[in-house]
Length: 543
Image (cartoon, rainbow, N blue to C red):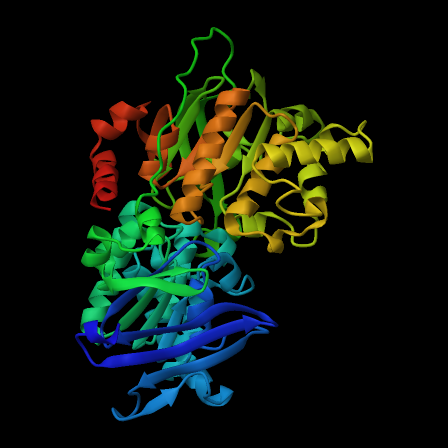
């Protein structure tokens, strides 16, 4: 790889090996990153991408790391330091200042007890020596640079008060605070919609040009690699199987694994919705959701202000139909889903199989069996302290208490087999825990948990955004098959236009809580009428 470098190397990695006990997961890989260069490391979940990046800063717990990772330059141009053998005290001075990292899961990487502004300011105070006031002002500016609306207000928010995309942007702002020489970006745009993804790429490119920053981009998004990187290295099972200039690798991939990644695209395979005169599974008329927010000044002591998260939404979902909801982060998509699930108080009419939510535990129990949810991040939505049997069978204990333990086990195994998980693949399957499965397998567990009570409608909240391209294709094919076999309806929340195109019958486009355009998916995506829809579709086509 060194022969393809244009600039002098910033980091030179040789013979990197990472093992957990007697199991080696990274097998003696070599790569270099030149000053100001963008190298993409791609591969499926479990290929060793993230472990490789974390090992450079020795952030992998209980791992044996061997090899050499020379970092060139620093306070003096002639400095050369081996990150693998460097004392921990010296390495602390490099982390965050010379080498920064954007982590994949911002909800777990951000501290839930501090505002995002305070967390960004802490980095500036520690490494740049800024005063608290100056650090806070710089934090607000960094949030603005990453495209977060109302950055001063968002700086005062805690992580749980931000959308998934906004949390990811806050993580990016924190990583870029000290203008590092090398940025390790682990899936930096996973939770972002297509338009904001483009903004982040432009931001990273601008900072790279301005400060000569190099980037190691870890991703499963091949479109992102095509648009952003200079070179690409493809990892499979801890080995680099192919590397080279992005254009060369994408136009003429040599390794079968690389060809498999490039050819993995969502495919549309949905049955047309049967004509029916029956009641819709879900129907909303003039749906409105309001959040209280603090008012400025003394008046805020006595009365809260209002933030309208969803305003006047009308939609219906027929049996066997998929309604896609697409829009940028903060558009109101997830709030719409939570209201549909009966988890938020709302104004207007919202009926599930013809019945209104009472927002009362006892009254709503029957409706909760009709409507289940699959969340965006299976790692955080599945309890790490519960076994597969407890997770999947939990719904039966609530909705079918008459079943005994053996009946629940039988139903759980059947639901798992329906999503492609069996005891033949995973001995003692019901006794395993979520951490023993890959990301795609965990999402299958989440789908099995939802299906076990025989619902009529699933709310799918970004069900594939955290998955690599090959697993995404498999999960979408699974959802399509389940819909055909069971007549399921889906409320699909996503920022991915291609997922909408592959899965949805109807689509609504949201921005700032309002529905801007709605209709059949082919009409809306192929001939959009609203300027905002045109912008979303154009951004997706660029990828």
